[in-house]
Image 1 (cartoon, helix red, strand yellow):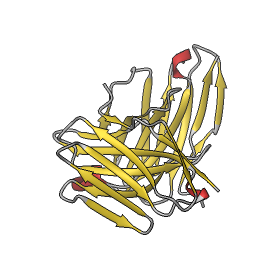
Image 2 (cartoon, one colour; image 1 turned 90 degrees about the horizontal axis):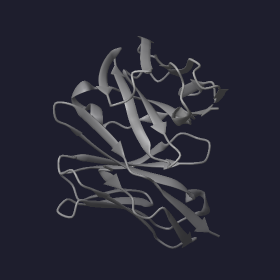
Image 3 (spheres, chains in turn orange, yellow; image 1 turned 120 degrees about the vertical axis):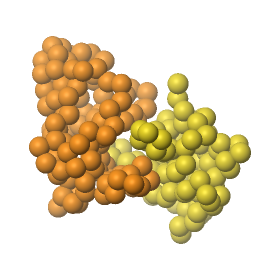
Image 4 (cartoon, helix red, strand yellow; image 1 turned 30 degrees about the vertical axis):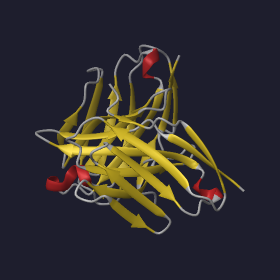
Length: 117
Length: 113
């Protein structure tokens, strides 16, 4: 009965490959997020979807493409993986009352540890 | 350009004493602040938050103080317990045409028994 789940937990792959990370939340939230935590432990937001609509799209390479088939899922697809993509990727969700969106508590998944060789 | 900074990467405190974690920000548009706690191999979990219209918010052992003129907030944990040992992130947010939700760099707290 995990609230926010991510698969896989670990991902080791070669440079140049394409991979996807899946995220699902069973909290009934309208908003979902993807974060990247790099080797310096900075936690940076990449994307956010509210009811399947993209609302935050920070400056990330266009090799990264989020896909939200429904409001309970936000998957992250990465094309042509590079060494610098190695990081921990966290998915999160929040209730998503649009007016107070940024004031909301976010619930995080356990993270996906991506290592690009 | 890190708009939210936690200048102490680590902090050690004796059990039962007060832990004070600090966070500084540069953008005066931030109007809501949150603290998250993170254990190893887990995602961050929400701890406490404060709106910019307040200068203090308290929840049990946790109190957050906001000094807007100094662009500074702090998290006080009293009394500190070994289970509080974790990495603490502050986050600052605002909405102005676009949403911003920016995390600090984290402070690792170790509470010594």
